[in-house]
Image 1 (cartoon, rainbow, N blue to C red):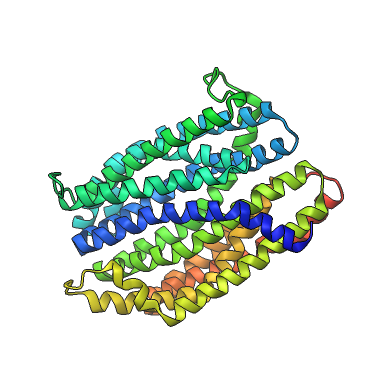
Image 2: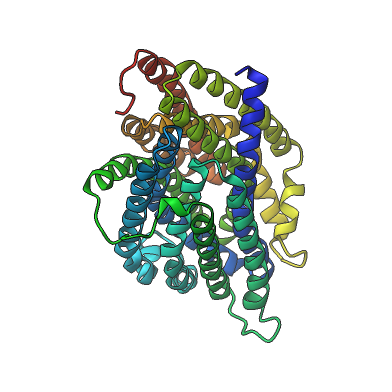
Length: 453
């Protein structure tokens, strides 16, 4: 394939995935906007509670994401049996993880207090998480089916299911947060109920689609039977993926905790800025998914040249999109924040000022953030997950987090210092992941040896 052909293939597969991720982010954005209009206290509580939920969700999603390269590789070899076995064991591991961590949600209040949050934020955060945590099981199963379908290059259905979920969430939030249409006014708890409803609706949608379009995969036939070989394979790939994502999302969650030490208003500004940057970042997550699928297919066909050309094409597209986002962060940060804050909010100007500064800092590290997630996508497609996990641990927690703390507190830079620490961790991770793919994994594949490590 020529480079223009690679770009067309990337866009054909990637646009629905990117759209699906953006629709998924719209759910979080809707929560943030509506809670911001409800009260700053509720927004602050759900910002910290949502970060808490997301950390555990993203960790558990590692097993679901392990299904994508395995399914893509098996699909390239027309191996329906391996597709079924990999997907089923991803379902098994996701259920097990959800049950193990459920008590953490039920008793999250003391944990939030121990992390330095106020009593009010901790109490509201716990009431939110006790409900939202029930949605973790269906949420993880939705992730399994999304990765299964993406591995089969059925990305449009992933987009439409997520869009429907975002619409359901918006209506449910409007009814349950504010008490509209005869519903009780539940505030943060209403946002949690809406989230659980979305996950259940989405799960029903993806299961019905999979059963109708791929009946030959027989995903639920004797689903209770263990498959030790693929259970081990999915666990071996998925645990490092989950831990790697945990380290990055944990980095941002820890930044929420640290900014919560400063005060409620800075935490609210941080939550808004984080939502905005996440919308742009999620575009690159979609590209990373494309990289995983196409890399898995190329390796399944034993075509390293195709893998290299496809990698260059997806990195070029990533670069263009990242530069465009950086311009927006520098030029119109306050404009992007306005929809999130009630005009009558007394702290509105202070939230805008703090948040705009944070967004300009985000402009400094957005390219590195995009590069690291796309490089990880390529590595996962090659089923290389263990060494990148160690690289992530060093970048985010040995370098990034200590730097964030020192700049933010001993050096008195506050939220800006914390975000500069995030930038350091992301720059290191991006450089290390790119180096590993181009200098270690690709030559290993070209030489005909296993890429997994």
